[in-house]
Length: 172
Image 1 (cartoon, rainbow, N blue to C red):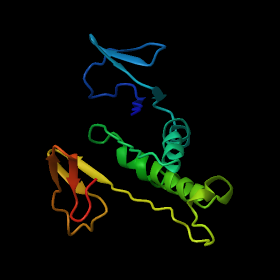
Image 2: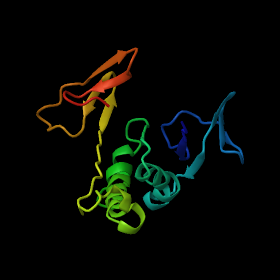
Image 3: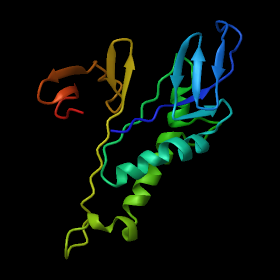
Image 4: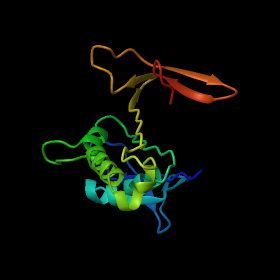
């Protein structure tokens, strides 16, 4: 299992607590005596395309070759998570629209990923499953459900299958 932890660091703003972050050349951020090491650090000025190409596109390549992948975006309130993921009026596309466009473009690329076809039949066998949840406090909300149906999801844990988010007929 390979886990890359990536961060976009911004300067302290008025109203923030005094920050004494020290960043070294090895992508380690120290806050007081606590060190946090990242696979890659993006500057506050890094745009969606830069973050995608350096941090998300490698996940897409792994996904296409058959690995399960996950993108987890965290941050405090008003940190810009939704804007980074979905985009807004100023940023046309967020990470997810770019990711989906790249995913389906690669799936449709016969030269590279043609092994997904059945012998003698031109029907594609590729299947894409996705789950998008928001964790707010202690509630887990399925973001693909309609706004009227936003009951929190439940977490189940068994010795055989481990921890799963129960979303009705599908567990992830």
